[in-house]
Length: 270
Image 1: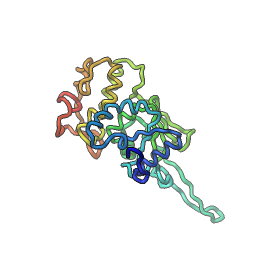
Image 2: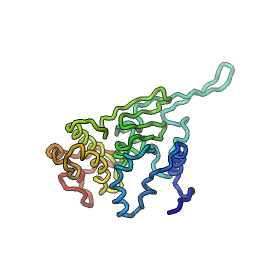
Image 3: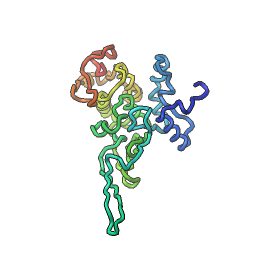
Image 4: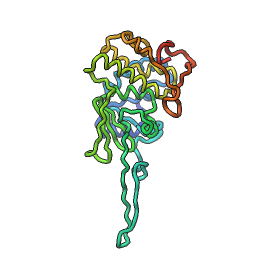
């Protein structure tokens, strides 16, 4: 594998992604599972600490919105069987058969900065905590789902059955510069609330999966980072509390202590 990786050994999702990169003319591609040595704690610690720079420095992030794992395709196979499309068949006056397809509009898509129930159920990618900071740090993301949708730091849009009918979503949570200290502090608290709804495969990853955003906010806040809280806003940040009934339906946010220590008890990450 130091010289090449046999094409046939790559999962279908990786093959699809490489095909897209070739079409777009990209020479380099970062895939965590290939670029980080699996089950190597030292390599994970080294590369994990650079995750913010990796995604922030990318030209484009390709997101497999509807794929449950890397064995599934990046592409939506047949739009005629889409749950948001309906078909109507009949006969003309001369007896010829016809079928008309109509699209049922929906007001959500994977590029929407939302953890709404339709988004979570339709797009497994949105339930993953590690994806949250990648979504905010990447300058632009292309989501492959039932439709193509795109997200930039400023806003996002979807095809919505045609390029002339794009719907824009303004992002209130953004790593763009220009916000006041008070707004940055409020943004941070909102991000913590959204992030803690999401799922982690390893419970000790809660702070590491949020560390890229901390690296971005620290110089702008000019404050010391304390396990998910900020020293200059410590009184307000300490007023967090858990919602036992919130979170992803399959795995609600847990108010129990993790099996292994991961943060001080006064931190929301504990």
